[in-house]
Length: 253
Length: 161
Image (cartoon, rainbow over all chains, first blue to last red; front, side):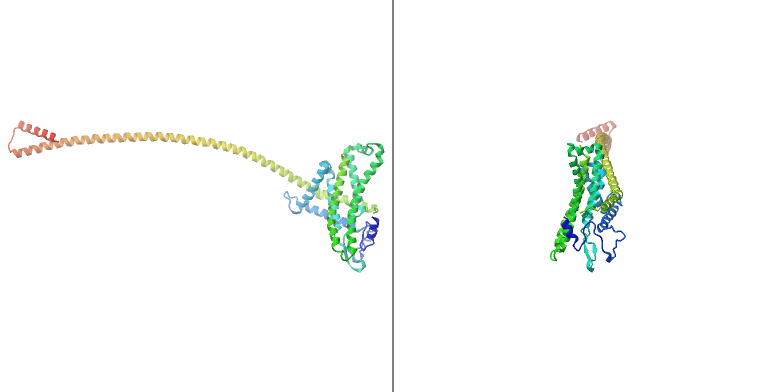
């Protein structure tokens, strides 16, 4: 994977978690915030979009929903029902909003990587490339997985009190190190899966675009169409696995 | 693929901010609206059910009442029919009696008139006979002979009649 990243970072586009937005030539200069990267702006953009869309969706509070309110209720209500069926109403009451927010945020983040809004002025010409999805940064997915990790153990501890930690040494005490590895591997795979899929998809699209003139148009377009599917599947898998881990921890013993 | 902890903290913090914002700006009001709608639909359905039960009960009552009314009406009609029949009989009987009385009276009058007329004719005939006889025989008779003659004549006239 490092080889792919190396190859990618040598291209005419910027990739990787700590790529700086070096577009000072057309007026963007983040020298005042040296740690700020492009995906952080996208992160905020997705946040802003979700909050604005959400506020518009619930603004009217009509008993007979129409338009955007209808869509919001369909989306949030549908996802909440989905998680309720998966993990039960009690856990959904606590973790439902988080899981729904995870799903929508990851979905929109994945799709944000397909928006060709990344202005750059390399070699004196203005060019557009796709934005960098926040979910294609391992630090972000690892952060999300850490949140899930905390929630899993919070749910387990809340439901089973101290008895929750018994599962680490069951059936025998010698299982303890393996159980601990198991607990760490779960969120780790969660982070790695999301990062790998989205990062890989973006990398492939970019690389195909630079491959040759003949294939530069339609091959990446086909890949983007697949990316629409991947984006949805990865958002679903992340929130679904998070829900399953939480319910597994809560139902211990 | 190394983890930048500053970026990770950025992601976690921003996600938590987003979660709190979404919870209070969207999730909670949306849930309230949906619960309100749920309650309203539930109460509407309950109201509709109770209204339907009321309507059914009322319908039953009304149909019972209707049957009773129909019975009463039939009763009234029957009674009226009977009364009318009785009255009819009475009227016909009285009319017949009246008619009989009238006929009887008329008959009596006719008989009386006939008697009267016959009497008058008899007298007239006697007078005529006397005058005719006195003219014919041109002689005076004594009263006895006269009378005898007249009676004889009348008898003959009566026999002829």
